[in-house]
Amino acid sequence: MTLVFVETEDPATPATGGVQLTSAEAVTFARTRAAALDGGASGEAGAAAGADGSGSGDSGSSPLEVAVIGELTEAARDRLAHLGVARIHHIDSPDLHAYSAAAWAQALVDIAPAQGTILASGTPRGMEIMAHVAARLGARMAANVVAADDQGLLRQVLGGAAFERLRLSGAVRVLTIAGHACDPEDTTPSDPEVLTHSPAATEADLRTRVVRTEVEEADDTSGLTQAKVVVGAGRGVGSADGFGEVLELVDHLGGALGVSRVVTSLGWRPHAEQVGQTGSRIAPDVYIACGISGAIQHWAGVQGAKTIIAINTDEEATMVQRADYAIIGDLHEVVAAVNEEITRRRG
Ligand SMILES: Cc1cc2nc3c(=O)[nH]c(=O)nc-3n(C[C@H](O)[C@H](O)[C@H](O)COP(=O)(O)OP(=O)(O)OC[C@H]3O[C@@H](n4cnc5c(N)ncnc54)[C@H](O)[C@@H]3O)c2cc1C
Image (cartoon, rainbow, N blue to C red; front, side, top):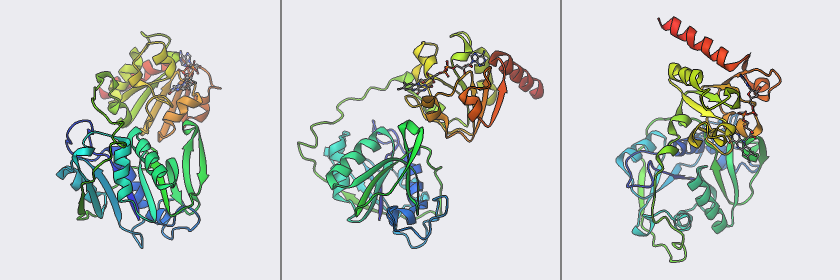
């Protein structure tokens, strides 16, 4: 059996609705890789797993179960039905209203399968809770998994710069799924059974818990992580005043600006716009890297892009070598010419 811990939207405040995008990805991952996960991804290959690890999972696999802690809104229930969930464990008790990794993890341990996989999306909260779950169950854990098939699991390591293949032994295995490992995918809507649990937490488990939440406005990165087109800008723009053409291109394409760490370290742009190992990880349809060398820490955040276009004066730059398309030239001239052409064509 596979149990997915699902985060609802806006966990810091009373639930407002649906399921977080990353959790929808994790549920889809569990459903479409069910055969491989049921097989343990530990040697006993799942019959329905495809060569790319995307087996249908609809035949012969155990029903998909999820756990939601806190309020379960109608919107969340409906979303989970469209994601093909068979059973929702709704865990709601006053002890768990404030986030506490240990207490939330224990609530999941209480309903954990004796055999199978427990997983969550690789968000800070998903990572923290799954680590507690694995420790409490004495189970083996793999973080940042991107694929599961009859070869085992594939996970990102070194900030996404490399991949590791592995198998987890044991009756129960614990995983977190890397962001963008798969797209959320609806299926024939189910009519999930809802089981309600009201566990009491121990004093020891509640010792560390959230007592206050402050939201920093400048840190909203949702536009960047969800944009279909991201225009990246690095040191090559030259100065804080060098973003004019790039921002105009962002505007033309209805995309978002993403920058390298050099740019944020120099104070040219806010950290919320940084992509990479210590910034946001993005997976747009198109990433246009302007004046970015393609350091490994930057690459870790952009390698999920479907198409990468590099604009750089140095044809030897790593970003140029790795891009699908490259334009060798001064970014200010190249981007200005692209903007001019877009304006001309749009009349
Ligand atoms: C622990 C750690 C974490 C890190 N995390 C991140 C991270 O999350 N994100 C990140 O980006 N970096 C990160 N870094 C930094 C990373 O190693 C690089 O230093 C950084 O990505 C380089 O930024 P850059 O490409 O803008 O600058 P540079 O490496 O200096 O490259 C500038 C590029 O611009 C080109 N160029 C110059 N002028 C022009 C022009 N007029 N037109 C066109 N091209 C031009 C140059 O040829 C060059 O390729 C991290 C580093 C460490 C140690």
